[in-house]
Image (cartoon, rainbow over all chains, first blue to last red; front, side):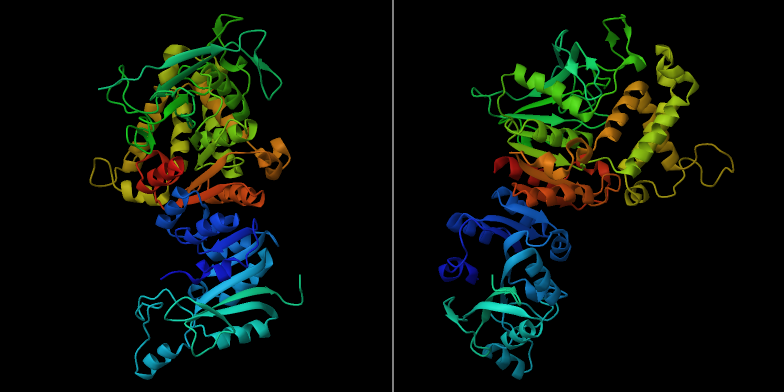
Length: 200
Length: 369
């Protein structure tokens, strides 16, 4: 699947030359893309050794670590932007990860699959654990240990004083971006988050 | 079969002796080194590999005098290997203070025509690097494609990147540290005590015919060797197995396989290593502390222009991954180009000396990028 963060509508919102930390950077595609398009100074965190090697080969700055361990190591506001691209649903403590991201970075860009998407609801109604193009796993082998819906995500941001600066949804049929994500029609969503109580 | 000859460089003749960190001077200095591959016309393909405590200039291949013995990093350096000698000109220099051809405590002091022994000045990692720089200059190399090293060699690689920012394009410290952790200092101190309490050592003035009888050095090596391995690797390799008998002898003979292995390692080391060199080199390790030398790690790395690849070994408890990660944290804070890779291995510190596909792939990928 193509990463919705590759959409120019999204990365155009990232200022040039900012310092970016990509949590769960995989083989470094997104960082390579952002470096090319926006001249960012990017660092990636990943645990998988094949991913680390792929990043090293591409000259991506990469740090082999768990996301949790890496986050505890950085001091406040070390980065301009923290990216959590399709990784939040794999975290044991997603709220902590978001809060730490907003501690070490000014802005967090979070994308995740919406488990309240209508196709998923339909499959659950049929009594099966849902599988979609974006969620191809079975119940026993999925890395996605947290079920996130757009409604629940927005609620937890509100409860915890996390400011939603911008939001987008992407659909099942293409990766076109539309503002104001629908909990029913959106395959997934992208949020630009800021620390609450601050408008800098 | 290709044999590489050890070569010798001489420099730092008076009055241009090397000024050491201690304030003393050393010169003239002989550096024993080996090179692999050829230097290209613009001298842009040179890689310096720095060896660890017990290493030497024999990086790869076999030597004519000892054809059974492969160089200490033969798995990584050679045609088509992680450091490809078809592409790169690879240099490995025996460190000063050592005993494999470069000036060290067993060398003759030209002033007295006697071996230096303990009159050899105490040296640091910084001094080692500055002596190596003379050979790099001698080759007319303005830019090193990479400086690579494990353990003590990694310390040298770091010091190279700090001291000569414009020279070092890539820096690869493996299983290394920014300062020797107190636990490692402790083991080295015990090793030195073993040597200095050996009757044969005679305050460093031991008779050369006794040099292969140095029990103290053997013990020091045994202690060191334990720290380079891991509990898991010892379990897998030896377990509690007895060497020869089927049951305990209820005496103090060397009974267990692990005992016998350590004794073998100790004895083998004594036959090739100088006890005084061991004192000097472990002291250089103990003095290594970039925070003290430069005020802080931020200060140390601030002007570095190298691209860094730090590699740590998951089971390394003597130079634990945390030591490398702290360097990475600082480099990220300084916006430097850095990658950090933690090799999953149960072998312990010495994993970097053994063939490891991930290590090979990562080093190779970094050199290609």
